[in-house]
Image 1 (tube, rainbow, N blue to C red):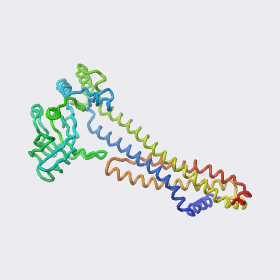
Image 2 (cartoon, rainbow, N blue to C red):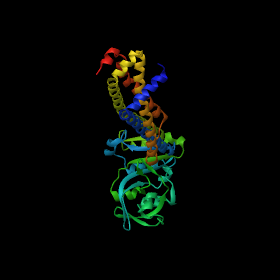
Image 3 (cartoon, one colour):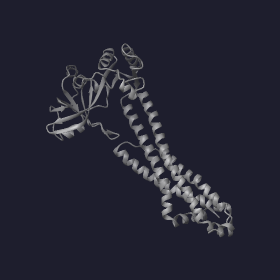
Image 4 (cartoon, rainbow, N blue to C red):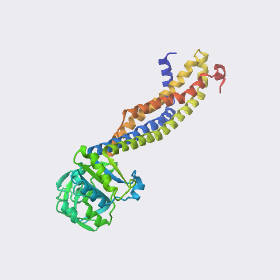
Length: 394
């Protein structure tokens, strides 16, 4: 029999058992869908974070607590506001410095209350260090306002929209917790990341944050060298300054490039892990294909015996059932790819997601392989049936 005839027979067998064929392909569809969606989320996270870090510039370094960051470093954080000031004094001619203190606070204006705003305590040089921060209205707080601990605040676009809608925000006074602050600036729109609205934030001076929250430790210190060529000198000066009080286990200096490389490694591992988890569901789908094909062989034993009696070769029987299994798997794979890409595009609009060609090729290749691997045993079993025994089968 030629390939076209075998294909026609396989297609008729699939159409003849629509519900069973649907349920068989559903397992493959879910597996392929899961691979594409989960890998796309991992790739999207990697692209977003890498782009955000790259946008900071090649002249920026970050001083973070501990020798490798993480929860342990946060719990044993020894970086203080004074460390940031010491670095700033050392880098007067070579760079700019800003500490970061982070809190979640409730904001109130008149009778409107928002309980989940991110408060960032920073220095007046924050916009010069973190150049992705731009002002839409007003100005950032000054060095004088910072040193005096003045209660002034720069708000994000979401904060403005919640409290002032389309009205004027500058000069208005708003409660941060139980303290009243005057709005001096409004940031440009930053957008959201992984469902977190970055515009739902407010900046106050690190001195005001220290006074209000009674803290001296900081989340990190951001440093921008005056030009990229000075970066090695800046890193050396930061090390020398901090090692007067701390040990090498108390802090880590990360450049934008090293941080990007670290994040890429983590997100690559995350993508592989998510893909591996999704592949398990695809494996389960393959077992479903094998089960259904074995049932199909049992049900069609007389048909197989009749075809062999009429001259069909063992190879023809094997190829018929193998093609049928592959068709089921490939159909499920194609549907899974379409659904996975569609959902990934929707996720990209709401959160972050990037469909990569390799994930589509990998998922489709897996679906074909599943059809071959799990369809082979039933096909071999069918091809080995004796025509006499098959015709006598009840």
